[in-house]
Amino acid sequence: MSRWTRTWFLPKVPDVLGMLARQADVTLQGMRAFTDWAGGDAAKADEVRDLEHQADGVRRELLRSVQEAFTTPLAKEDLYEISVQLDDVINGAKNLVRESDVLDVAPDQHTQDMAALLQLGVERLVEACGQVGTDVGRATRAADEAVKSQRRLERAYRSAMSDLLGQPRLGDVDARQEIYRRLTHISDSVVHVAERIWYVSVKEA
Image 1 (cartoon, rainbow, N blue to C red):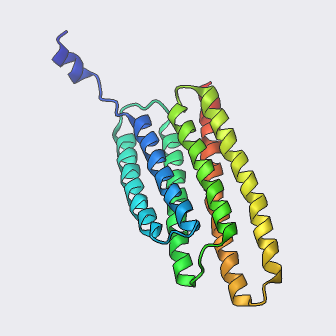
Image 2 (image 1 turned 90 degrees about the vertical axis):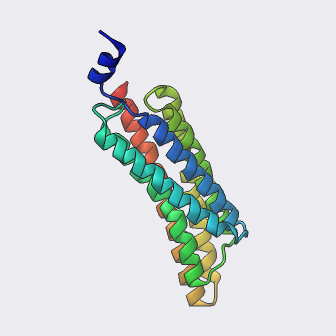
C-alpha cells in the first residue's frame, strides 16, 4: 500500500491534548496578569481581557477539532468539560476586573491574596493538563495540589468576610462581598477542572 493510500484511509487525529495544554497555558498567563492587577497594577486589566480573548480562540479551535475528529485520546465529553471549565476560570477573572471597575472598588490585600491562590491553582492545572492521558500519576497529583490551593482560598475568603464586619459603610461592604464571592466562584471552576481530570484518570487507568 502506498503512503498516499495509507494517508487517505487513516483519518487525521488532531493534537487535541496539545490544544488543551495551550488553553491551560494561556489561562495561566491571564491569571498571572490578574494577580498583578489585584496587587495594584491597574494597567494589567487590559492584559487580562486580551488573554481571555486569546484563550477563547484556543478553546474554539479545540472544541471544533474535538467535534470533527474521528477519534480522540480522551473521551470527547471529557475534553469538552475540561476546556469549558478552564474557560470559566479566565472568564471569571475578566468579569471580576470589569465588576471592580463598575463598583469603583480597588483590589485590597484580601483580593490580592485570593488572586495569588487562584494563580497557584491554575499553575497546578497546567501541569495536570500536560499529563492527562499520558501520565495518570502526575496528572492526579497535580490536580490534588490544585484542589488543596483552593481549600486555602476558602480560608482566605472567610477571613476576608470576617474583616468586613467592622466596616462602617454598608455600600462598601456590599461591594467587597461581591468581589470576594466572585473570587470563590473562580475557585470553584479551578476545582471542577481538577475533579474532571481525576475522573478522566480513573476511567483511563
